[in-house]
Image (cartoon, rainbow, N blue to C red; front, side, top):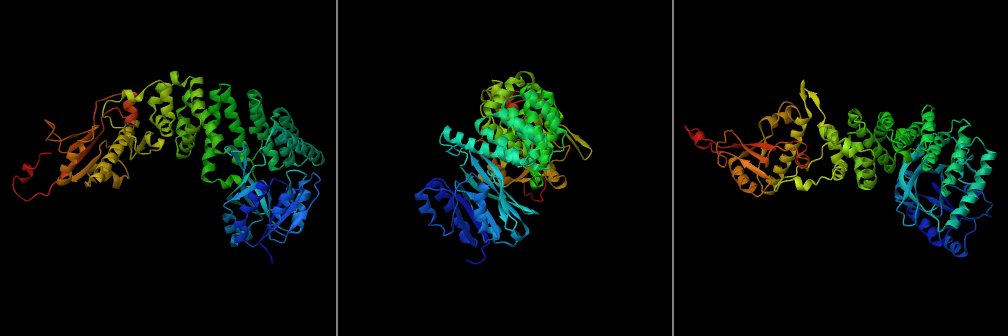
Length: 590
């Protein structure tokens, strides 16, 4: 092969099945991109050696000397590609075709380094994992080489632009067969990292790896001591920033909340990367919550929520030159932070902060929170007495209730109140819970110089739910209907309700209305009023409404979007009227 685009280099020393899975996973990539495969034998078993000989002729011999960089440099030295990709033999690529698309495009000429996600599993059934962005594909230059005996890093090149690809390499390198195997790896890496840190005291990446090595054996105190040592050596390295949150992580694992708060308050004042400062505040939220200082949690809310929303809008703005963001912004950590925040701001009755979190991004994460962390939610709501002290506050703020209701959290809190919602519903009640509303929909506002109070918003939501149900009925029975009067005017002129209108109007031709009267009787929770079935009906339109009377019960409010009155939609019947005297009067029977 002449001038391959990609060199793939792998150190081989693992088990047969792991190595085969790794090599098989790169075959789609090698078929689509002109490539070469270089395997460095660092001491593999005979059956593994026979296996790898089936995949390539380029097998390099290396006598193991406890130096990963030296082994990597062996493959790099003979590489002929434009790019150098290095893997471990216990990882395997998913959707390698996406890498091929990049390397076969003109775009690849604009970059020096490519990142993908390494998914590190914590157990053999692969149920627990953490994704890390790793820069393991580098453009080859004469000066490129690897340094450090363990956790090797490329060096010697000037990196202008990096490209992040949504490709995953699954990795089982941190899953151990037994404690002895884990201890052996910990001891090997620990000795090498200690030696590297002594030789290169300003290399903050090594200090980070040195501290993280002790996480394997849960020696949080030793890891924290290493972080303290490194932080005392000021550096402009991104890893120096990361060591600040490494330290707070150790203090959190030790549950040293007071010490974490004191340290975190100091770190907030430091000039850290945005990811790391967000991480510091995330740890502070947890620490304040754990010691019951809910007012202090509230002091952090505006900054962390705004930072999170900014991140969701443009994640790449956070990625350049920073580490750890994928940790602080992953779903588990965000949902945990939101759990603390929601409980704390309700406890402190901070309406302004609850309005801040009533948005789509937060609702999505809270939905995950409710599904995955119900036990924690129950424990914390009981812990700070939300149930007994703040029930009325939640009920009186519709957008808060809607935020909690939409994510399922409201339902769970209702269970904690020991209220059986089903028992409060009367027979035939219609549950108007068909549509999705942003919590901000229910906030009061001024529109066209008219103040719209929250109860009006509740009525609108309930009417829209009923309209949706009527629409489903009409579609089922092929009944034509259309919006009319104020609802039509509002849709065109205001793109919604007329600000001062509290009614919903639809129209039907006479034939469609007659069919509608027949089928609506099948729906026990709905009733239809017109001149035929309601004595003294004085309105010029018919009305479809929910059954029942005014009710402030939790069941009724929950079923009807917080609106305590029966919900109605006016139906205007349209006739083809002849130009005859008294004809119109004779047909006014609706």
